[in-house]
Length: 246
Ligand SMILES: [Fe+2]
Ligand SMILES: [Fe+2]
Image (cartoon, protein in one colour):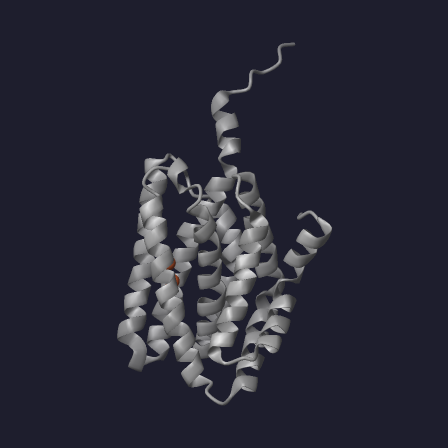
């Protein structure tokens, strides 16, 4: 009986799995971001012009990334992204149905934007391996920071002198996504490791970024850290104890 020859193309596909999954999260995460800003615009007519502008910027990011993938023959892994983003999408639908724009602002400003920044920042170190991707990721990164600035200002004004209420909101929003975001970040960290980047750095930068955002909204730093540690416990365990992901 002859042993089937391994086709070089299938090896190539296997090697490309991490980058396909990262690009899947980038493209479909951007589409989710566009949707969240669109829903927020419907709930807050007074901020609709800027929120719609943000929605179209996010849509543009998705288009840039798709195009960059096409030029590098990378097929963004939609199935993986759908699986990772499903819980966020379900949460977003529930918050919108409840008319809860502040909860949407926390999901978008803190989870979705932080996740994007935590991926795009380290990605720039390897961007030159994939021609045409550096500029679009660098530009998207800059624009995500601008979105985060606006969102933190919005939340700071909305919860001025109501920090306890804001912390309760963050806890409510995070509790619903807590295992999932931790799990997704662990996978992202693994993919970054496998394309030669530091997953631990990425995880660290997401934790740092998140606690900084809480502080910018007016949460004392100790409280912010406690909130973030809860959210990222699975990641902390992974890097402290070398636990593997399923
Ligand atoms: Fe974006
Ligand atoms: Fe953004």
